[in-house]
Image (tube, rainbow, N blue to C red; front, side):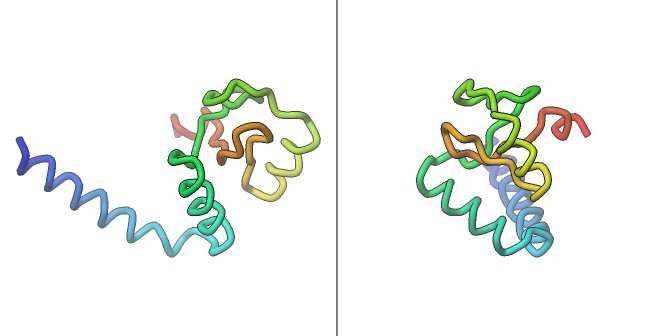
Length: 88
C-alpha cells in the first residue's frame, strides 16, 4: 500500500511540474501567497458563493475577477474555482 501511494505521489508531482509553466507568474505568485497565509489556496465557487466561507460574491468584484481570469473571495481571500470547471 505504501509503495502504491509513493508511486501516486511521484506521478502527481510530475504532473504538477509539467503544468506549472502554463500558469502566469502573477497567478502563481497569488496562489503561493494565499497558500502560505491560509493553508488552502483554492475554494470551490457554487453559483456566486464561496463554499469554504459561505460568502456570496458581490457583482462588481465577481465581474472584475472573471474578466481578469482569477476570482478571489472578498471574505476568505481564497482563489475561487467555479464548480462547473471541476466537472469539465
